[in-house]
Length: 364
Image (cartoon, rainbow, N blue to C red):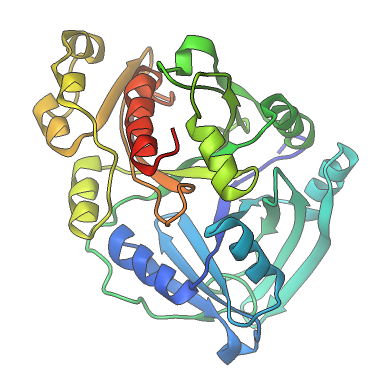
């Protein structure tokens, strides 16, 4: 609370989608999320429909236009389905907004209050990279399902007995000028650098990128920021920027307590994950580097899960294919055992897997 810009954590990831009803069904069935709230024409919102889904502390808000001529519809037409808002919960919206704007942030919505029979929510919004925004939320005096204007909604399908994931680990942005946005988070939110990956850290034979990770002091909110680096062919960041039409959120990492069970269930529901070649698991250096982990390497091989270790512990991770037709937004599942890293030892294998998919699309 002594920070100039204290945060409580991620409040919601808000998506603009072409069909909110179908997107809500996908994330319910394939990601095991529970729908908890809805807003649309039936509730007095004539221009859009929005479904709110949760899994543990993870909250997705899926907004879709229901008529032509709206800014939301324009956004979907230009960018495809994607993240428009990384909402952050703060203890004092007015103080956070004033600090952000004084530090150079572009204000989008000055502090305001929404109220209904469940209490009050205080909100404001500032601009981030591209058309992404950060809504600042204080819901400490609210007991409703999401925000005033939304009504409680039943699950679309019966949720799994055990959720697949329970928290947002980090949210990755792809931009054209990384240092500019790293400086933005330093100035505006008081975030500090958590990691930096440059040069050979994050390069393959064909392409390269640079990445810095900024985070708040509690490490509850972590934002890796990527930019393309020069290489003989098109990097995954360049592909994203081209197909998304500018900077935006590349992927959301979801923290899980059981990555094996989550992958098994999500695959059974139709989620496609990036493939990792057998050579990754056959490499004797891998086994020497990772030491003992909670599951045999052969079980990781079956599911193509990656593993990495650092001085604090180890992590298990896997990445989905893009979840829409454009090669833009995808997801990561991550299971941490002490490590607070981002799988640096897996970068080469991961980016080679992404490049194989780029080649299939003709975009390498």
